[in-house]
Length: 415
Ligand SMILES: [Zn+2]
Image 1 (cartoon, rainbow, N blue to C red):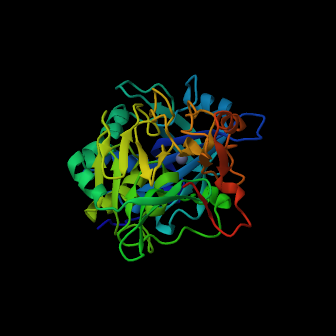
Image 2 (cartoon, rainbow, N blue to C red):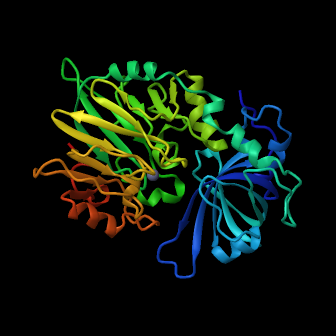
Image 3 (tube, helix red, strand yellow):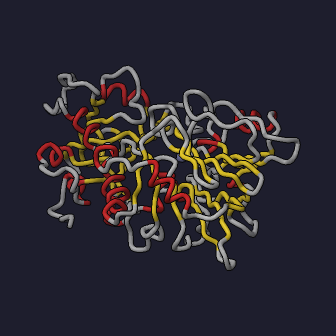
């Protein structure tokens, strides 16, 4: 069992953290270059001395949100550019009042409440060993490689054989409809399959929900609880695609099998999402591969990129005589995932962001539906009008999950 132990610097407001950069977003409507950096963090002093890094207690980890300007970050880090998604950084944290504001969310209250601190030092941890250059940094020169090595699902858990995944996929019945749920700034798609009798089971592609700082985008109604024989497929390990499966009192997904890609993750994602599911022996991981994994009606295709969005799973499904693609957040094209030509329906990747790659052409002159899963009034300015235009020009009828308020349903039927 994890011990909760004495309060850490996250409670006291002084100390040092390592954090994986989950997302760097320019805040829309902000003329003076304000950025929101979403981080998955761990107490650095604890981690430097930990003998068993993988048994992290809740008191050592926090989800963090740093809000600051580009100029301020560059001044703090001494770098020429902002940290990027996938970088590990080291931060010096002090009580509020000085530095850039940092909000920290603790797992003990399910990441609901934020405490405010200030960041007064920041360093991007190199992929390679190199001496530290900042003034206010620790001698932890090996932290970057060590963190990257440690928080890697391929090493933490390891991959299963494609054969076992195919077997698991074949336990589901034929898919005959698809719904993209309005879960705010997140992703949640249900493939319904009719079994004997008239009970519906489902394959869920992503089980996202917005975390506290995107709570305002959430729909008041959640998707219905999944049936006990549903199967979860995670396209990738971003919080907005997995958050509803985190460890908490009513985790409706705990007893389901999950299929997910081996990717690099952060300490909160490990301790609160991946590890509990692995401990229940219900997590099947797949290494990225060049050939598809083909089952009766589902085909899993891997992205060819290196970052999380582009190295995950794209779900291709046959629904009756229609063909459907659920690429998660992957770019469409050679640097992300390549799609078949004759699609009838698609969930447009990455919440309709600007960089979604090539818009595929739909199969026929019949109505072909493209849906964007996006949170109402989200801070990122998703979806991009250019992306919508691109899909429309190619012949898609584009709808959005966030334009459903006041309607009877909280989902868009994709097929
Ligand atoms: Zn996403």
